Image 1 (cartoon, rainbow, N blue to C red):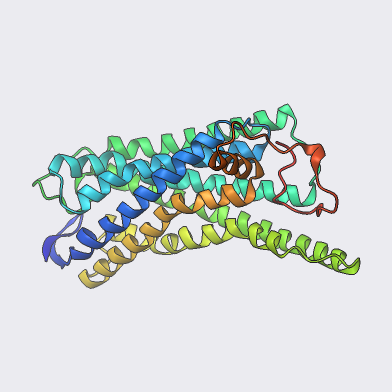
Image 2: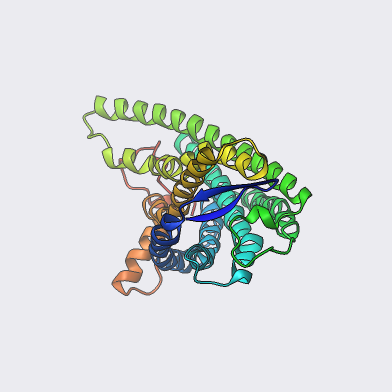
Length: 339
């Protein structure tokens, strides 16, 4: 059991058992790192052989970059949590890699929201092709998201500037200046707004997608065609990943942030919030390993390129808008006709 200061502004001591975070979570993050590094490196290799001829591909490319950056922060967290590094490593984690982790998390959330909007548009207007203005707009929007999150995150790095009192730093909040704690709390609330905006986007879009798929099911049933069950399953992979990875953490984050920046919880409540935060944070990290399933099931160019690569074929071709097979549902949001 280790003792540490309960809050940044409180000198009272609170005992906490770190065995779980020093043993179990480093092992879990090691698994995510190995799996995620392989799958996302492969995804990046494939995506950058595919031309960005649709908003969908542009958003997916940004997502894979974000996921790969997140995965590269895992080794530092693993070493730090397992107490295998020195004091400077813990300081580096608090000042740099933890900030990058959250920076990439909200970039991924933002692009999942944009991908959902794109899939809804594909459902309602399946034959609409992308034009240069739309593609430029998607690229500009992508740059804005990266720039906004960078500007939001940079002060968290700069304001984590206190010298540690000892080598065994228990909480990153001990390294933040007084304004750094205030900025940290502000950023957390802004990130909550980003999450809930995208949460509402996904709920609304998938409600409308479900209605459209049901109408399509009724139409095909009426003419004796079999319902496309596989399509329905693929459509909901985005919302499944979103709810598994991001929803639990955001229900836990506000009270945990308050426990870090204000003296509002007793010791037992603070400890419980810590373990809940660590568990749900691991689920957010799982997103980097689940996103490749989105690429595979929703992006035909990615799937074709991967299959060709595994078969040893040289250079997979992207689906042609004019090659839609006879009898394909016009409301299929998985159909990638604009690539």
